Length: 212
Image: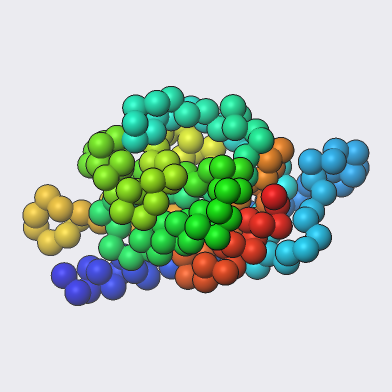
């Protein structure tokens, strides 16, 4: 059990590095297009540790913990924090959601200008009810999102999200080694930068405030 857990923790740390490399290797953008499009102007009062390719975030439609349909493009006036995780996660997911809650508290009345999204990587166990109970432990303003197989396959593919189901011992229980970066999308739906689970709540707060 200990060796399995160690493997999962290592995998959860290595996968973001692999994906970060993917983003950096695929970060060539047409400069002339960006210069003529005001959406691609970088915030000037914050220096992110992980800069993403600046492109419009892929749109998607999923269902939240209350059974309500959620479409990313219909919230174009809000900053989005997009995270892929699952409710049985033993390590990085609680760190991220705790930071989400800290951001919401720090922003006060401005918290309605952001949306904090956790998209499941474990739909078999993460029903809307389970997601709702989980995010409520951190902050009710976090939206837990799931969907049918086609919907989830589509959003995972659009955001290049790798994950792997790892069986624990000889039983039916399993963990999910998954992509763990938080993708930050501005009010114009442009991917800007990313947070890691290990970053402090102040890193999250300052990053979000730079886009308000």
